[in-house]
Image (tube, rainbow, N blue to C red; front, side, top):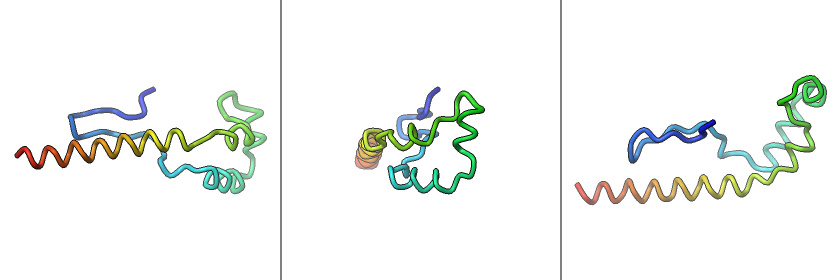
Length: 81
């Protein structure tokens, strides 16, 4: 599935969480009461260890780079008016 949808050159829709870090994920898992059970009952619910082992830095870096480039494009569009 698409996580970022382009509507126009400067308008995008996002379906992602840029706030995810290892610490945030750890806190989310700690607050979940039955994640381990749910991961055993449902095929697409991951085990807590799998979720915590994921490196969110690569995803966040790519998203931040994308947003930096989008900001540059927006600023260029203002100058060209």
